[in-house]
Each structure stands twice: as C-alpha cells, then as structure tokens.
Image (cartoon, rainbow, N blue to C red):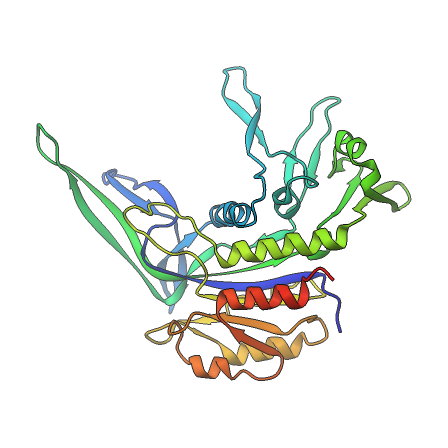
Length: 340
C-alpha cells in the first residue's frame, strides 16, 4: 500500500441564484451595477462568460469554518508595518504553526528588512478557483430601487449567476508538524525555536540547513488534517448572503489519500443533463492509473438527489466508498486519520 503523503480531492457547490465573490462595480456608464467575478472561456468556438470564486475567497471560508468547527484559535491577520503616510503596507498572521493550526495548514509570509528575519511557509493546502460548470451556467441581473423619503427612487442592479461551482485541492499531509529553515527561507522564527526547543526533533538538510519536526508530529498531523476535512464538509461563507443566500458546503466531495502530490480529480464533473454528474469513466480511469499511488480507497460523497446517475455512482464497486459528503469525511477520518 502506498504511503499517505497527500490528501487530494474535488468538490462541487450548488450556486443556484448566487453571488459569492464580488468584483466591484461595472465599468463604463453602468456604474450602479455590482458584478461578480467572471472570466472568459472558449466554448464551441465562442467566448462564454464564466462565474468563479477566487481561491483566496473560498480558502478564507474554509479557514474560518475550520477554526470554528474545531474551536481553534484563529491566526489573526494584522498590519505589521505602515507607510510614511500611515497606511498599512505589510500584513501577517501570527506566524506560529505550533499554537495555531491555521498557520500550519495554510502557511504565511513576512518579509524581513535588515536584521529582521524573513519568514515564509508555503501553504500545504493547495487549491484551484471554484468555476462554473460548463453547460450549466447563466448570468442574470437583478434590477432594484432604493426608495427615498424625499426625491426620486435610486436605481441599482446586481449581476448574479446560477451554476454549480467545481474545484479541486491537495493537502500536503506529510508537511504538517514539519518545518524547514533553509537559508533565506525560514519557516520558524528564532523566538519560536527557543520557546519550543524541547518539542522538536532536529535534523540536518543538505549538510547545512535545519529541519524541525514536532515530537508528536504524527498525532498533530492527523488531528489537523481531520480538522481541515471537517471544516471542508461544513464550509460556509460567501458574499451577499442576505440577498443571494447560498449553502456553500459541498454537495459532492471526493477524497483520496495519495503518495504523490497529484490533484488528479480535476475536471471530473459534467453538465450534460438537467442535473450535474460525474464522469464515471474518467473516475475509474484515474483510480486505475494511480492505483500504485493511492493509499486509500477513493471516497465519493454525494448529496441525495443532487446528481444524475446517482445509482451508477453508488455502484462504482471495489476501490470506492460512496456516502454523503459529511459521511465520507467521517469515514476517511476514522479509517485513515484516527489517533491510534
């Protein structure tokens, strides 16, 4: 069996009549219209506007939900330096992956100047944007008025969309609880190393750099990965929820443990019918091609009644576990992230 170094997966969110990530006001003369983030894609030799949620936005939903669901102290983002005019021009979190699981999972950066240390931990959690599913995306405009006590009503408009948002991710599980100080890229500050020096196992990298691994890294790794998956299952957030409320918890969630860091479950969803679907031939092919890299079965969580071909999905066969989205989070955690 392959080693569980990574947890990779994909998700699909129901964004029917939603506005989850704004791009500000429209250009030109139509400056009373609020618009969502979109990009243009070539479909059948024509350009099509595609709604999306930035990785930064949905990662913030995930960070906040994960902290809340696990009662973790958030690593607050704060200003650490001001310009000559007094405005903030540098920000950072707590820069402490020991006490703040969020910093361990999502990384951080602080650029130093002079004798100040530069601290950088690239995020172990990698993610795509969430983009509207092909053949299942429409954009509409909600026209409205603000009625004033005096004067004529003031018109305004909001552009929103109906789609299903797909994305994929990979968690570099092996990096949790492990920190490298390599030349100009230091993951741990001197102050943290001094404070927690009895908590680390220290090894040498490339003859001159240092790796610091928590002595209880195996337990820490499991707990933090399990907490992240719990946050993913219950994920909540999004812009304009008062007017365009949407449940952003995944209606489909695919998970698998892998030895390699391949985010293999990308572009796995289809929009060829009235409901979204999963390309089952592609899913089976991925499981077959990566069978020597998979360290767990492929867990497929689906919300009842949401997908077409639901019965075919439930009968994927050996190598697959099918349940609800939260059901696969629970099963994956119990079977692969349990603290023995």
